[in-house]
Image (cartoon, rainbow, N blue to C red):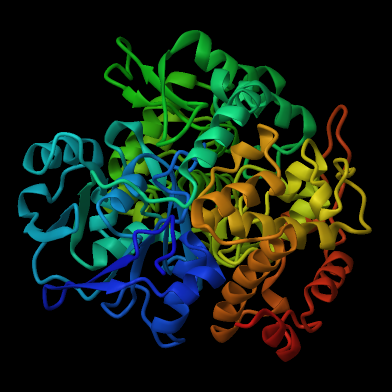
Length: 613
């Protein structure tokens, strides 16, 4: 019997030979790994090995929905993109909202797996089970905001578009895949836009009219109505102020990135200039929603005059304001809205872009590079013109932008000298805007995340501040500077987030009061399959272990589960701040023991057998 909640089909394309094939969904894998990033990881594990070139035709680019995608389950409008990352050379994944995933599902596909390289630029057009490979020569050189209306005109006015900009075409290792035009939803992390560019694939347009069949539609809808008001009330700030609403809170906590993570003291007044409250009071023109969303955290902004006139679309998220803003000591909100739009149009990950430019500014300050290296750009802290020009140079792969476009790890290897000491990355991926010195479980989660520096793979820092989960043995938030139990907390939260990324649920739903018990109820009503809370957690554990096994095959072990030098050795001080340095070794040992891994960070044969991997 066909699994409910799934379309039951996977679209596979070999662009080298223009071959299109529709395969049945592997229901055993779907049951074991749910969907989204879990199922994507299973396909990647089976299709690649340590010899796979991330930018070679053999590396698959996998777009995957989950059983909740396209249903009325709140905040389920998401899909995952999975591949071997050209930035880190290990497991790569990026999660994105918008409407594209729901349209793919309603077009009759749970996912798309793309291999090969087209001899000419192409885009894909899929509608209700039918797929075409079309010429995209006329789209070359165009940014993602330009591509969206052009492809809607060529396909369907309500089609959803995922596209790369010039950064992806140039195979910049920080390139993202952008969705929904100037709503600017991004599969940003791990350079997967470069993988798409390496395949000569400019965009994928989809439109679906088929209804996603669920097992108990009346119960799915009932729960949506029953819990909707609670979610909106509890997560009201996401609705009012977006993700940037917490920027000043994080500054006060000492977890906002400042001056490439080295700033001493507070940045209170500047933080207020760029936070979500100020954005809402000045430039906000409206909100936008992902599919099935009832919060609408997306910010629409518009600038009509001044040097940044013409900005009109997605406003910057917290991560963007922090990495392009405070990390570079820039507190001009209009300039940051412009910088955000540039990154969205070019298709650049704002987290990695801000991280690598901040690193470049410190290298400039220390005299390791000069204006001769940067092409005349005075790459100094707080210099808006330098930020803007470097974004352009990174996307266009020109001058010093080509160096920074390789990411912090590779750029520091090129610059040399002592730059490695202030090159913040984990496993080659730049840090998101949550200082691991401020959360001990967060630090452990950062160090062990499958894709490198990542707060979303575990979101464990939120259980050290706001969230609780009785089902996971977390009745109340745990003090963020406590050490004992933090390795266990990091592992538990990674298992939870692995399931959310695979079922396809926005993590903001947790702030709305939704628990594992609620999610398990939805799973039963969507799929018709029974799942206990223990089954749920075990499935999340299986997903995380599979990703780890993929990385172990590539040489990852305890030696790589670490934090940047600065975050292990340099205390952050300031009024009201606790100068904490995470005792990572102690927490890692606890983490590995709880996971059933060896002290080297390798899943044991017993654990692999237990999980049925």
